[in-house]
Structures are given as structure tokens and as C-alpha cells.
Amino acid sequence: MNSPSTSTQLPTPLLHAARHIAAGEFAKAEALLRPFVHDNPADVNGIRMLGEVGMALGALRDADRLLARAVELAPDYDAARYAWANALYKRHRYADALAQLDLLLAKEPDNAAWLTLKAANLVEINEHADALPIFERILQMHPDHRQAHLSYGHALRAVGRVEGCVTAYEKCIALDSGAGEAYWSLANLKTYRFSDEQIAHIEGLLQNKKCPFRDYYHLLFSLGKAREDRKEYREAMAAYVKGNQVRGRNVPWDGRAFHEECQRLRSFFSEQLFAQREGQGCQARDPIFVVGLPRAGSTLIEQILASHSQVEGTAELADMMALARKIAGKQRRDDKSQYPEALGAMDAEQLASMGQGYLDSTAVQRVTDAPYFIDKMPNNFVHVGLIHLILPNARIIDARRHPMDCCFSGFKQLFASGQGFTYGQQRIGQYYREYVELMDLWDAVLPGRVHRVQYEEMVADTEGQVRRLLDYCGLPFEEACLNFHDNTRTVRTASSEQVRQPINRSGMDRWRPFEQWLDPLKESLGPVLERYPLDS
Image 1 (cartoon, rainbow, N blue to C red):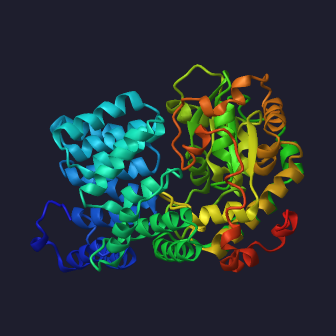
Image 2 (image 1 turned 30 degrees about the vertical axis):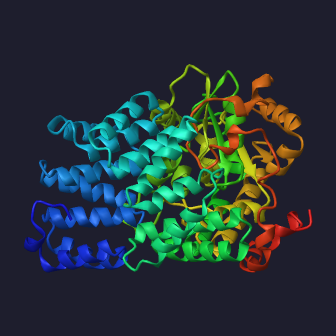
Image 3 (image 1 turned 180 degrees about the vertical axis):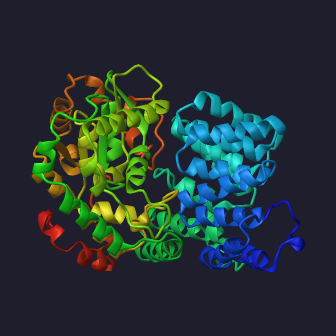
């Protein structure tokens, strides 16, 4: 660990924790670090390490708080400030992250790691024109900088320069360091096909007992995609199952807690509540929310709408979820959440202020003068009630896909962060079921409020579905929405290459060759499957 002290000067608990971190054993590291930091509240090495472990475990709010404290105690502790900037980046607080990085870069303008993170933040706020030259500058100074090649590849992919992004990813692999994420980035293009030599290389890396933990699970998901493309379904499923087991151990998911959260939403939100609040909230019409599950067709809907002259596509914005966490008022992980019940005590002025606050915080993502913008954070299906209370004129679209296709696609997907519910058939099946039941609630207490787009119907009758979608959004029909694949806008999701092609049936029934291994998913989905017969 990079710290003010050399490793030999670190206290014994920190040395042991560092070894666990190196081995990817973050829970074990946390078990050592948490009591150490409690007993040594001014030890910036321990605070920083605990913050970085928090990031690895997805406890980003805790990580942010710890790393901010480390910087407060030691303002010249550059490694802690850099780690804090990384936590801010992961929390989607890009302006705050850039502020910290600019402080660092004022001291070392050519620091490649700091420049790389700055460019990555710029990518997230659609400032690709500023980000790409930074990546190119880094690679001129450090042609073997693996992370810069990787991040450069991500940025090139977002703007549709696929040939360049493939070259960048392949360069990472050639550097023979951290090849797992580069291989997964190639697999995640969905259109890339691995050679025999590449598959042999992946399998060789997986057999190496010294393979780093982060590389290991990236390589497993990559191998699964490579084998699936070759119709070697048994081998592909084995790789996917192993990848989910390995990744799932480090991305916690509490299905019972999520069920209880959904139960609280169902108990709190009612027709009566919304009737009492009618006419309240911020009256702006700017946002169009696309909700649902990942891999359900939300990027396709976004691309169609963003091809309209009056609509700007942004990204999967975390602002609504951040607002819900703020309302929840939890200071520690074990505290009881006040969400959604706290909304009941809020007056019209507070609701309007929160709606305006959402518009203000998302303004950094808007780079055109279009009157409407899209927030396609799928997890916002949980917050439809909140959205309606604070932004009653916003449009809300539910992207729905056959549960077997949607869940299996999520099961195969390695997400950059979060989405812990996808790493297991039982996990994702239960989550889909909770999602359907919660959307049923919104349909019941807010009839007609949410517009549903069924992916299979969009494929079967694209023009009819596009016209219905535009009518719901109050937008006139434009031919460009049917030619969405010609749109050159940036796209930063796993479907970026698919939505640059005309609509087709290739995404349908991808689960069927794997059906013999999907009984746990079917059982977990339970009655939801009755709405979508398996022979449909």
C-alpha cells in the first residue's frame, strides 16, 4: 500500500490487512482494519486502507467519508486524496472528483494515474472532446500505461470508434499485465469474436495460481462469452457459473433486505397519498426516466428517444438514488432507513425543492439545448413514487423484457460496479419478481403514469411502438427515431454496439441453449413466468 509510511513501518494489523487486500480478501481485511481504525482514529494509513476496502466492497458512502477524513487529517497525503477522488468518481460525484484531481495535478501535472482518472471523470460528464486528448497525452508519455490504454478504449467505444477501441484493448493484453479487464472489455463489445490463440491465453491465465483476483473473474466472464459465441454451451455455462460465484462473493446482495424495502414501499405509497399531494412538486417537464432491469432494452429506448431533435441522452444517472439515500438519513450501515416514510412529513415546498435539486445536480450531464433529457438508471424503478412526488410532469418508461432473456443476460454480464443481484440465478430471479410486483404497485396507485415498452413488441413492430413511445412523451414523430442506429451520440453501456445496428431478433431467446442449467432461475422467478409462457 502506498502510504506516508513504508510497509515495514506499518503496524502489524495493517501489514496483515495489506496481504488480504493483495489476495482479494477484502472482507478479511475489513475485519482487521475496522477495529484498528476505531482504536487509532488519527492513523491515516489505516483510514485510507479501510476506505479503499470499502470501495472494493461497494460501500462507497463509507469509503467517501473515510477518505475525506484521511485528507482532512493529512492534506499533503496525495495517495489518500487520489483514493478519495476515485471514491467520488465511483459515487458519480464527478465535479467533486475533478476538483480533487486538479489540486493533485497542480503539484504533478504529468502524473499519469491522476490524469487517467481525470479523463475518466470527463468521459462520465460527456466531455469526450477534453478526455480523449488527455488519454493520448498520457500514452505519448507512457506508451506502456495499461490503465490509460484501457480507459482510452472505453472512451473510444463510447463515441463509436470501435476499431480504435479494439486496438487499445488488445494493447493492454499485449502488455501482459491486468489482461482480465481488457479481455472482458473486448467480450463486452458483444460483436467481437475471440481467436483460438486468445482463448488459449485466457485459459492459461486462469490456470495460473498467481492470477490476480480481479483478473480472475474478468477472465471467467470473457471465457463464457467466447465459448458461447462458438456454441460450446456447456463450457460457456461452466465459466459463467464460476464467474458469478467468484464475483458474487465480493459483491454482497441481501435479498431479504431488498424484499423488506419493497414491502415498505408497497405499504407507504397509496392512491390516497398521491391524491393528497396532487399539484405539488417541481413542475418541470425536462426529465424522461427509463427504468427496469439492466439488459432489458433500456439503451435501445434511450437511443430511439435521443435521436429526436428535442431530446438529449445522458447516462445512467445516480442522482435520484442519491436523493433517496439522503432522505433515508442513515449515518451507518446498521441504522434504520427513514425512506420512504420521511416523505410523509414533507410539505409542498420541500418536494418542489427536491425536484429542482435533481434538475440542478443533473445539469452537468446536459451539453445541448434540447428541452428534454433522459435518465436511464434502471434501478430507479424503486423510486417511481419519489419521482412522481417531486417531478410530477416527468415521463417514466418501464423497459420490460422476457424474464428468462433479461435475467440470463444479466447473469452473463459483469458490471463495473454494483448490481449485486445479478451474480446468481436465485438472486436475479427474486429481483425480477420484486421488480414486477413493484411495477404492479405503481400501475395500481398511479394508473397510466408509467409507459411500458415490451422489448419483444418493439422488435416485432418497431414503428408502431416508437410512435406510441413518442406520443406518451408528448413529442411529434420524427423519422430519425426509426433510424436510431445512425445516431453518432456517445453511448456508455454494454449495449453500445448493438444500438448502432438496425433492430433485429438477435437478442431474443438467447437463454434457450442453456435451458437445462437454468432451473434455479425458473424456480426463483416463480409465478412471474406465467405471464410469459416459455413457448411464447
